[in-house]
Image (cartoon, rainbow, N blue to C red; front, side, top):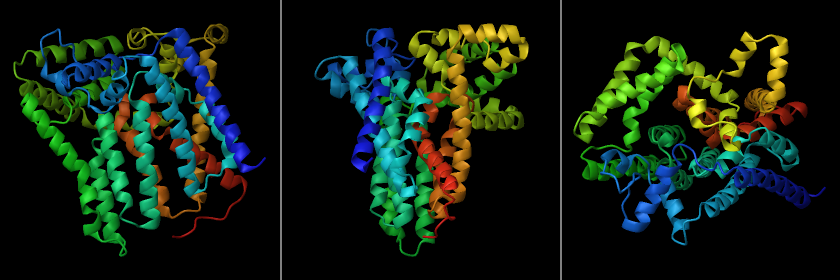
Length: 446
């Protein structure tokens, strides 16, 4: 089969996969998650009043909603809503973006040893990563965040391989777009700065002054946007959700240590206490200080817990999101504390009960298949590290880039945090397996 024909077959296979999930979305109608309406509301507020606000304008204004959602995704929605408010058009566009992401990542990873003849394996890995298509068909910013992550990754690889300063402009642009779509990339701006400066100092062919502007640009954008938020709310900050992040981390630790119901009660008490403060700046500072206080008081056990959850990042099956997407469950049920994890059910059940459970919950078998494929991905990534014919600095950047998402999400990790780097991990893993099977010689120095 020639290259053009095999690429066409690959594209058709991906489109068929996407069509299945788009049809499920049409049939089940579960295209919204817990954050969707805030993004939609902000897009409508911008359209009607040019007001960046993710709350309902009928209710009293709340400073939290002025900066709760960064403007990237609402502006994407606005581009559609200018022609008419139709969320199915949004999902259709997101499916086109999803197809672009897969093809773009496939092309990028050819720089690191991936070959199109491995496409059947990539289709198989995508089949066992339903979150790629679930989030494509949700009113959520995750598929756009994946786009920005892939663009950043491509130009970072080119920068490290070819040592040309012009690539850093693309890196900066992708990072800025990504952090305004979702703040998960917000801390990476500092890593971006350090990486570019250190690599420029190490490489004699690069001059620091030629890359300094692009190294600083994301942080400068963060600073300017935060200052704009200070003018609007009285507090210098990037997103109001930041203030509660540490408390959310602690809540997950507390819930797993005690139980989900007490964890829910804990977060409600914290919210109520902070809400009593009259000024937004005081609420923000109090939430931030309270979260840090809680984590510090349980520092050693929490760090151990956080790192353990970061490891689970690589085994995430996305079953909860799939259940919600198909209508088998809801957010309320998922976080009510009444449902048991599958591993807990195995421990507490005999073989007869387990067989009965699997017969009535066939999606669990699919989730076990996803878990098995996830283990294969990890093994493949290790092979990639050993055998990929690229410079060590490129391989280690790839691994550390993936680890960033694992560490930053920790206990709040679920499938949509895996999504930004999922395609990179798949292609690297497949490349690693194929290099081992072909007994390709070790890495090449560049």
